Every structure is written in C-alpha cells, then in structure tokens.
Image (tube, rainbow, N blue to C red; front, top):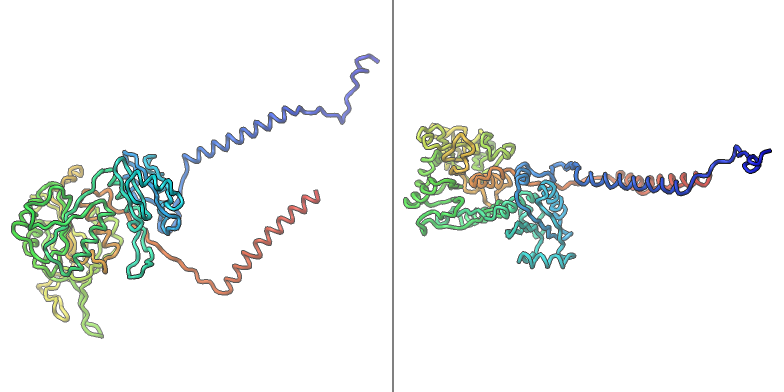
Length: 498
C-alpha cells in the first residue's frame, strides 16, 4: 500500500467537515447590522413621511381650511409654549391641536410644553425672558419681540349660570390660537372704536355689548376703545372700524358729517346694531343713503290659539347663501331675541350703482314672520301698510366694490343688524357670536380668516343593566385571563414534551 494512502485514510461517510466559527460569527454580525440598518431606515422614513387620520366624530383634531391656508403662507418662525398643568381638563386637546399647527407649519412653528408645577426652572426662565407672570394656564405665542399669552378661559366657552364649577361646552382653541398667531406675526393689533354717549335700552344691555366686543377682540386680534363723537373733531385715524351697538339717541348733524367722511375713506368699516325703539332718524337716513332703509316696524309672528292671542317678537332667521363671508353659517339658524325691525334692501337703486355701492341681505326671517306697523295691538294682523316676506333683519354694504377681486381690499364695508340684543349675555348664542366675528373680520378685509368653527364638547353616558354588568365582569375578570392562562400552560407542556 502506498505511503500516501497509509497517511491519508479514506473519509468515513458519517464524517462532515466542521464549518469555521469565524464565518458563522461574521454572517450573524452582518445579519444584525442589516436588520439594524433596515429598522433605522424604516423609522427615519416613517418620521418624515406618514399619514394621520382624525377619526373623532366632530373632527376635533382637524384644522380648518382658513388656518391651513395661513400656515402654508407663514414666512416667520414662531415659538409656541403650552404652559399648562397636567391636571387641566383641556390640556390634552390643546396639546393635540398645537401638534397639528407644528405639523402643518412647514417647520416654522416650534411647540414646547412646560408644566409650571413640575418644570419650575423652565417656567421661571420663560417668565424672565417674556416678562409675563404666567400665573395661570395658557398658551404663549412668540414671534421675534412680539408675544401673546392666551389664557385657558379664552380657549373655552363654559355653560351659563352662577355655578362655580361650570362645565365646558365648546372648545375654541383654533379660533383663539390662529388669531393670536396672526397678531404676533403682523406685529400690530387692529383697533375698533366703540361709540358711546348715545344711550341704550338699559345699562346692562350696553355693558353686555361692550364686554362681548372685548371678548371677540381677544379672539379675533383687535382691541376695543371707547369714543364719544361729541368730544372729538373727527373719527380717529388709527381706527380699523367703528362699533355702533344699540344706540338709542340720534347723532347730531356734525357727527353724521364725521361718520360720512369716515365712510368715504378707503377701508372704512362700520358694524351697526340698531335699536328699533330708538330715535335715530339721522342715522337711519345715513343708512338709507347707502342702500339699507330701516322701516321702523317690528318683525313678529302673531296668531290666535286655544289659549288666546300669541305674539312672538323673537325672530328665527336663516343666513344668506350668496354672501361669501357667512358661507360657513348657512347650515345654521339664528334667533334674534328682543325686537327687530325690517330692513329694505335698495340693491337696484341706480344712484347706488353709480357710486359702486353693493348691498346684500345677510339674515332673512322665517316665512311666518312679517313687518308689523301696529305691533302694540294684542293680536296684529297683516294689512296693506305692513311688510310681507321676504323680511331681512341684517345686511351688508360695500362701497367701491368692483368685479376685479384684486382691487376689493380698498373697499369700505358696513354690516347692519336691525336688532340691539345680538350680543346680550343672556340671549347670545354661539352662532350669534360667530356671525359677529365673521362680520368684523370682513370689515377688516380678513376673508381668509373667516370660518374657524368651535368644537362642541359632548358628554356620553352608557346605561348598563345588572345583567350586562355581570357579563362584562365574567368576560374581563374570568374568561379572558383564563384563556391567557390556558395558552401559557399549553406552551409550557409542549416545551416539556420536547
């Protein structure tokens, strides 16, 4: 037998070459690295490219088209601080809402959360930087040197009443935050002058209208300053609009000249709430000359019932579908408490057309209402001197309105409502406030900021019978834990058998 065969015996059929350990280790390391790289790549892709769906019934976490349009055109960096204690009932909603601002702000908006109770150091630093006390929950918005702190109460609407623990019925976070965002980016607050010295049907009514205007100003980025026209020589030049709310006494001839001179300027804005019981013949003549004639009657509905005559002055109205700035309200109805007078719309007047004055109705009363001259009668009936439907109780006037939309920023605008109780605290509805806000934004040439809705808060209760309670107990406490235990025993037994 050759020596080579003796030194190298034939390999047995059962003998297999042993793989090299370093090859296995390298293979495993490569698999781990590739898995980590894949995991990191997928997470990075998911961080920058993902989709969110708002599945809440009332779309609580979806921004309005108006806000999205503004965020898309944002040209300056903005810092937003959520200064809230975690025990606040609206903290979660505020945080979720501002996450949407951050996501749609094209990296212009940075959002940070500070709990003044837990993050004492950061809260004190923010106080030192801004000079604000931050003594209550709120949202701080900063853009350069401009800042605005929105308190928690400005973000919500609570139920009416005298209770100290009023429930939240609406969340107006987007409305307030978008307004404040515009305020700090623009760098100035718009100003409306509230005309005083003309009386009111009551001191309470005048105070309600003034306070409601201030609240609207906080949400819509304007301030309200009182002015007595008998004490000034002209309408202040820094005004963005005039508020004439429920005047009971007439303007003097000098004041009407001042009002007319202001109306003839570019970008004038006037919001008027008429008191049907007031003596304002000169103011009415000014309105008639511009296309809206107050008739001096009362809009009502009267009928004979089994319990006697029924006369109703509270007007149920619907919004016009042809006026753009109230499109978002056309699916809602409005009730005007107190008394209203009908308005004649002089849209086809040749003289008005020559002055480029455009008049449009805003609110029309329900068909069962009419304009009654003899409204003091116990049971008024329609006769020749009365006004039949359609009955208009609010109208808009635009002077200088052209077909070219690019030139409409310089138009003068007016909103006229033939009711003095629109903003009364006891009777004001959410839709009344939204209508007033839309009108004021229109006066300020802010059409793109009109239509941010409030989010209604709903409470849901589920009534369960004793049998249903018992069924839930057996499923959650016995059946489901039992299934998990049985599955675990099966796995343990199979491993023991192997």
